[in-house]
Length: 572
Image (cartoon, rainbow, N blue to C red; front, top):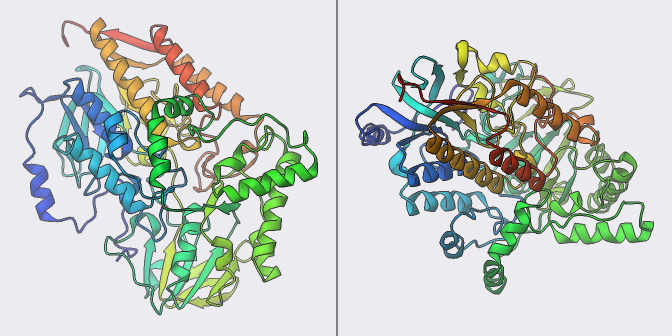
């Protein structure tokens, strides 16, 4: 059970970790070759960390991966909540670096659920013998660059320090969960859980009165599943999100065989697409280039396709022009009113305060239909916020609601949260948190000025969360691996972002985002969900293909925008 006293952040091992696991970690063989200095430390054993470890090991480097969880999988290890599944089709949300792997692994559903994705990550770890490089149940406290030795000192919980030439952060974008600062939670006598720290044994909701706080993508997935089991579910909504159908189904073996036969071509298309999804063809028309009847018919087709992705590419101007966006938003409003029987509930569900797609567009399985159930209540906390928890439940708008269980689906300190939890210090002992006090600054989302040999996989300033993240992970890992090999051949010891190149890249990221509706909306893309966090639009929205081209050109031009320093006699 996760209670207020047991909840831990992503950087912390669970306090109930098993001694057996600790013993296994302590008995891992030394991979430093006796020098005590590692070639690389990778933080995180999710999809980014696993592939990074593989590439480094394949290059013959000594590498140690540090993971706070008890197993691989990253976000798919932590997010075991009811209904958890991916919203990118499984045949695309998978590694493409090894053809035998993508041919041998058999996805069972169009949109893979959490247990299957976690099983896939475990399979990859075992198939490529990666666990021998990973230390589980271990938190990284700090990473400090020592200028005299040109090494990173990575300190772990418990005091052990690893020395390494290269430090690579595969900490993920949605891995630092948030519980809202609502008074009185410690007084609540029932049970409470955060969606991203779900107990391994699951939760039985039979006969329970349940409160769900948060209606983002996670809350939208949780709602129908809990409603089907609980005695009563009360959903507390502050801001409604647009939800389109996520129609899941078993994969047809014939379709899978045909798809796998074209994997090389499909992956290539994805690499040069807008979002890293081959199935999303780029739009060619404005929403006003067609008649209202044609536009309606296209939206109907997108709705029936059963995925959030087609709506983002229905027309060229949906994320550029508010009037064009309104045509799609009005279509969704109409669908909600068709589905939800109570007009007052439909009004609350369609009181959108942002353009469609400017926040994460969600895919749901019978989400709107769930509000027709007699055991489901929707509470609008926009005009009447949650004030406090009590022993029996919570008070919202002066009304006390009693519950047995509270679920927080309240999201994450996105993109920078996991990095901010580690005390990272570069040249001159500069703290990364201090450097980023006005918002994250990177060059290509890969490196930071003043932090030599520190790489970030899918960091702020890269496509990351606005893409098929597995494909973006592969692109970053391949770029980093190729960079390290090239620098080794030239006798280069350190690489870091040039300060001016970093500033220019931040300006470019902002310039690309400026014409879009993204920047006109408060969202976790801008950090607006975290009190006190600077509001800066963090992802790169110029498209996967455009971004990849820039990265390749930078590498080909002698790593333009990076400062390269050769080995010195003292460090050679």
